[in-house]
Length: 241
Ligand code: VGL
Ligand code: ZN
Image 1 (cartoon, helix red, strand yellow):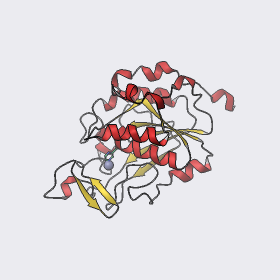
Image 2: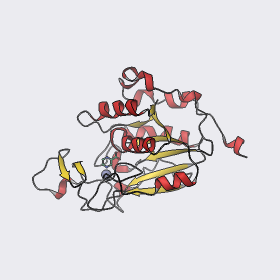
Image 3: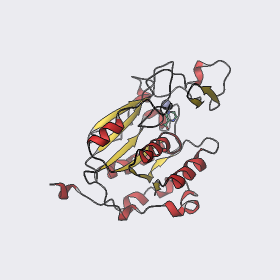
């Protein structure tokens, strides 16, 4: 029965990871904060998107997010409340054009002009079929409806779970959500300032109510990436808390 599957996300679950979130976020952007204690998440029109919880984005990985593995416990707890869950998996060919290793004269984290716009150059990461591309062993992957892979075309990167970085090549996630009659999209995972950010921006512009779960995401933190992400959430009406 639908009613029995609806559960409340207890704020205690979310706040248990507060020490791992980025300190200034809550005070600087207090007005778009949401208290998940009031959000009755988990109805059939809600989905939880778990972005890129893969070994290369966790400590020890080639693009490791500090404490990235510490959010996994929280993500697993949150999953218990949802009947719809989709995982994304960054899935690059070994010679992907976003890898700094493809260029002899470029620095890591510098950017280059691609036909679709500016592209940050990353250390090689999430190479198809490698351990770095696998989901972290602690992540519960059993409940997910589906796994969306992205970034598998050599010439184009993909941060968002919905569209590649050209903003037009779809991953298929939009179609899935529309078919499932999803209204609200809850987003967690790695990294807050890149793939979580672009997934949230696309979710919102596609018309979904969009909530990024603060206690279940962490940033890579390059330049002003965190500040820009949070400003964008605020400007676009993406809930963050
Ligand atoms: C990501 C950089 C490159 C992410 C993926 O998951 O945030 N960041 N590829
Ligand atoms: Zn990538």
